[in-house]
Image (cartoon, rainbow, N blue to C red; front, side, top):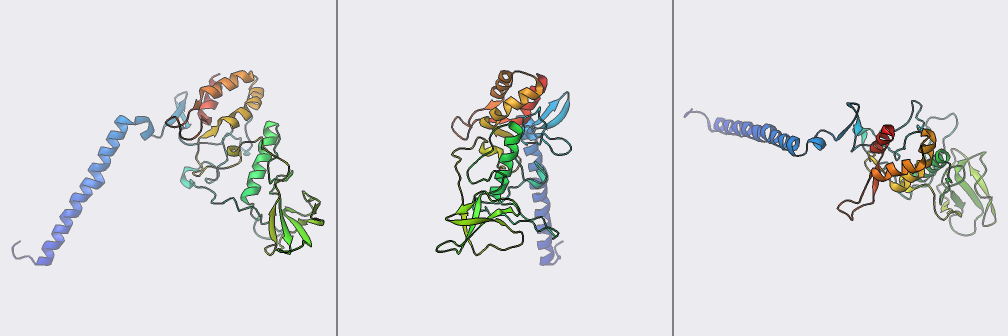
Length: 285
């Protein structure tokens, strides 16, 4: 070994360092962390699994859909908030839509052409509000939404000056526009394939002061995996669940209260209801 070239000594030293660091950081450290987690935080370390009759039915940390094979909400269960993680609550596709409050103009699908258009965030919110309103039997009206569940948005031409043309860009012809006139100009329906980029965007708030359907019922969480809903959204669903199950609505509201968690550390966030825990409590009676 005394007569080995210097470069060989350097390679051997590097190899020894690699082996030692691999053993420490790639084997011993993970084993220590896993051991501590299993002893101190056994439930969380194993996914906070929720079991029913000895079988895992979900996780307390990850939401899930309560729908039938066709994707329709099951009436006897409380519904989760929307999710854009894959087809909904896909842990391998956790994500938000990445759409912001200024995304209010749809791309209308052109009949016979490739692609299905694109719904703006505003239209997605309006459509979800309409679906929840129909399911719960309450008003689905909310500011900046049309009665048919799309964003109430006009494109006005010219962009500056006295209007000579106005188009309800999110309502494809032959749908009647949500307003007949804008500043004395007849409002047209949107024509798929026509560009309205040169026009001035005018959102119309409408007469609705406050929406009945809560915000978390029409918007997805940042992760797409949120297992909780607001107390307001749970209360909105109580009458429908009670009717479907044939139980007093007071009993359903009692279960909501029992499955409501308070603010984190007493002051962070808002009280929330874990949907899976609530539905399992309903099944237990």
